[in-house]
Structure formats: C-alpha cells, structure tokens
Amino acid sequence: MYGSIVNSNPDGIVTLLKADGSAAQVGVVQNQLIITEKSNVIETVDLLPDGAVSGFPTLVQNIPANVNAPFGLATRGNNAYVTIAHADEISLVRNGKVLTVTGSGTQHAPCWVTLAGPFLFSANSPSKSISRYSVYGQQIVQDAAVAASLNGNPTDIASGEGLVAVIDGNGTASHLSIFGVDDDGNLTLRGASTMSAGANGVAVVQGQD
Amino acid sequence: MISALAAAHAQNALVVTATNAAQNQLLIYDSTGQLIHTVSAQGQGGVGGNAGGIEAKGSLVAVVNFGSQNVSIFERANGSLRMTQSVPAASNPVSVAFGGSHL
Image (tube, rainbow over all chains, first blue to last red; front, side, top):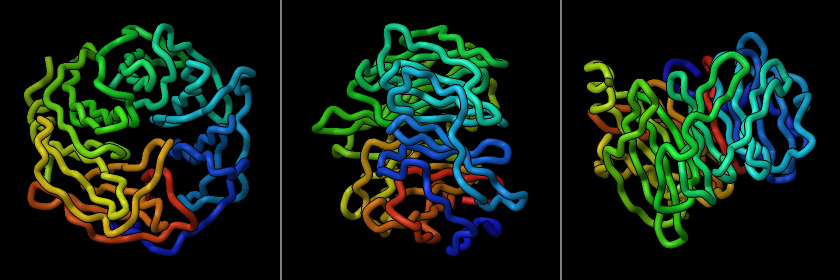
C-alpha cells in the first residue's frame, strides 16, 4: 500500500494447506498471517520484513484433538484468538502454537470474535448470543456467558470506537445491532437496523474524518 | 463510564456491512444504526460461511466481492465513504485483513 492506494499486483501468493474451499478468515500477527480453514486447519504464513507473503503455510502446533471447524479469529500483537466453532471452544495461538483452549459453556458455536480492550466478545451462531471473555497473558476467561441476545443467528462481529457491532440473520432478513461497550465490558444497545437477507461482514470505521 | 472522548469517537463512528448481493453494495450506518448511505462496491457478492469479509483500518475499508474475484477499497470522506479502488484477487475472496502496509 502507498498511503491509501493498494498496489493491484500481489507481492506474493501462497496456496493454503487444504485449499478445499473451506477457508474462513485471515488475520495478521506480528510477522505472520494466520488463517483458518473449516476443514480443521489453523495455519500460519510468514511475512517478509516488507510485509510480503513468503514460503509455504505451516500447520499450527497443538491444535486440540477434538478440533471441529476452526472459524473466526481476532488478533492483537502476537496473539490470535481463534474459534473452534463446532467444538464450542476458543483458542489462543501464539508463535505458531495453541497455548490454551477455553470452552464456551452454555453458549454454542462461538463462530466470530472481536477484541475490545481487555475483553474478547464472541458471536455464538446457534445460541443467538454474544459472550464476553476477559483475556490476559495466556488466559481466556468467560465472565459473561450471555452479554447480549440477538434476533437471529450472528454471522460476524466487529468492534472499535467504544462500539461492538453484530450482523445476524434469520433466513428472511439480516439485522445490524450496534452496542456501546463500557469499561466493564457491559453492552448497551445503541441502535439496530433490518436489511435484506444475506448481508455479509461488519466493520466499525473510525470516527474522525 | 465511557470517557467523553470515547463517547465522541463512538458518536462519529460509522458501521458498515455489505449486501453480498449479485451487485454488491456497502451499507453505511451511523453509530445509532441509521442507514445514511448505500454505495456500490462495483463487484459481485455471493460469499457465505466465512468471517472477516469486511475490514476497516483507520479511514479505509476493504470489502470482498466473491463473485467478481476482487476487493473494493473505500475511504472515509465527508462523513461517509467513497469507493476509491478495485483490487483483483487470485481467486474468489472470502476474508480480508490489513497488516502493516499491506492488504
């Protein structure tokens, strides 16, 4: 990228380990990309000092034996919080290795996650809920199984600027819910909107022009 | 309590999603969920079962166009977002991320 312009020519291309069409999400940690494939693979790709992808993907070590559909992820520094959605788990991946795994308790299929300060929020598709975790060091501690409830099955979650935004769907419509998040991680609904079914992705854009 | 500065940022923030339709569009909301603009992504949607199909970094937003194998770049301007660029992908994109000076 040059300022806000993206060079249209890729400076590197790699083929994923499975490359079976099940790729779910890509994120960036310090010197690597981290990628999930729902066919039970979490992998990393090294980045050159200039940020270009290099070499071949490497399978993350210590993936739990009960792995079932690695899905969404959120990164900060050298940490990647990766959901293993159908095993009802969230993992911490650092330096190419799973360091810890936490269960999602009463809430099922934590598919998507986002970081907001010391908190990690998961959007749990079949449970139509958002869970809140405290994350520090190698710990992922669930401190609110249901931080908020949703109208439909969530399909993405994002945060920024003191907000958490979630897209959900119920087959006939999609819904956007926008929450304020306070210093204790409590969510307060600020507004909601309904749109045609099938909306994909959500992001919060910074508040300064 | 949320600080006054954080509250001001939240007030001015935008929240975006994509219709993911055959003619993909970026839906732009204010922080209370009011739709303020709809902007063409100049590409085709159609992705499903993925995560991170939209990513924001600073004033930039990237949106995957699965059906047309490209990524649309938007930049914040005048309280909304305008599309500035379409970047081709090697295959049908499902997820996008910014890292350092790279997309």
